[in-house]
Image 1 (tube, rainbow, N blue to C red):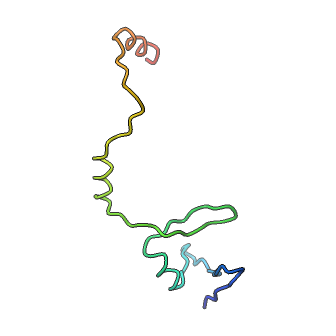
Image 2 (image 1 turned 135 degrees about the vertical axis):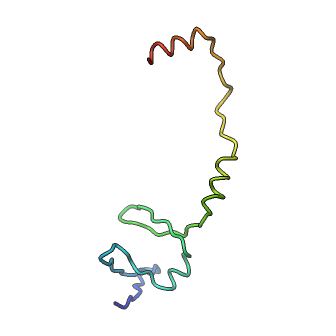
Image 3 (image 1 turned 180 degrees about the vertical axis):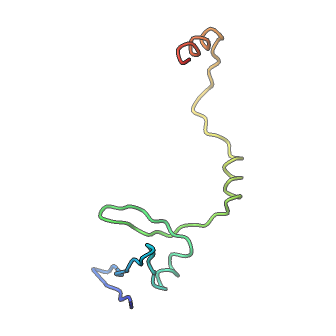
Length: 91
């Protein structure tokens, strides 16, 4: 089925058909602009496709594991008696 762009107030829209496996075919110019990875976001009144970035899983994992955790303040050093009260009430 050929796709024809619809120009509404300066915005180009395409009417796309979803196949039996839930896929859509993006026009070449849209694929070239978005790239190989896209993000599908729920928006008011529908969904929006945005350009995504592909990250290597191992690189991202290493970045997360080696990053310093965010600190929210100074740690409290509770005395053993307070810790025992916590253990008793949660036990």
